[in-house]
Image 1 (cartoon, rainbow, N blue to C red):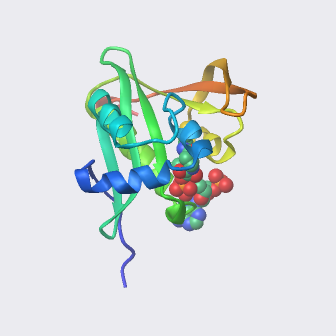
Image 2: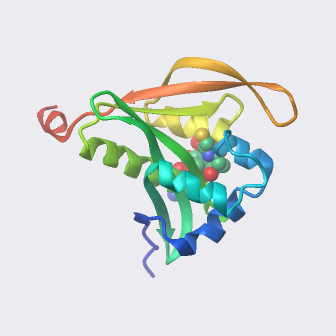
Image 3: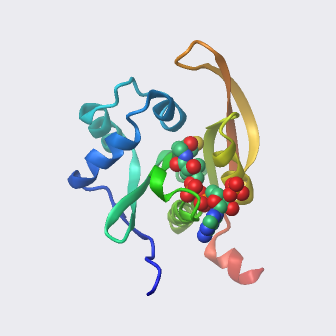
Length: 169
Ligand SMILES: CC(C)(COP(=O)(O)OP(=O)(O)OC[C@H]1O[C@@H](n2cnc3c(N)ncnc32)[C@H](O)[C@@H]1OP(=O)(O)O)[C@@H](O)C(=O)NCCC(=O)NCCS
């Protein structure tokens, strides 16, 4: 039997229950979307989908398995990859890698020269993923988590080579 392959498509109405389920835990919500106010609900999700670009579902065998989008898109400068999440049961199988690659492809397709993202310093799995893809820190800031503890938010960036450059090198 052949392994299911990830498929990428825009978020649909039918995905909303899955996204809300993934973000139901306040700690997970804070990791993925710190500006949200728990409990994360349809109103907040609709507002998020309105303000973000390229809101994408990674689908495995017809099932929604991951989500990400772009924000603060400055076409001549950079775009941030946001709300990266893989459904718990699909983690550790390379799908975070596939989703990140896809979002980087979207940035490259729009000829935006730099990809950025922000990640809490205690989020080891996410940091490992981004480090493997060549993201490096350029700034950090202090935030307060839902328990009132200080946490460090790292801002990472990576140059996105255009297809032309890829051909030359
Ligand atoms: C961070 C996150 C997106 C990573 O997703 P993922 O699908 O588990 O990522 P990957 O599978 O690509 O990589 C994770 C691990 O699986 C391993 N892996 C990759 N491909 C694999 C495969 N085919 N089979 C088994 N393991 C594999 C990787 O080596 C990696 O291990 P390591 O980081 O310990 O070295 C996911 O953990 C998640 O959704 N976390 C909660 C939300 C979150 O924190 N989001 C980030 C906000 S900034």
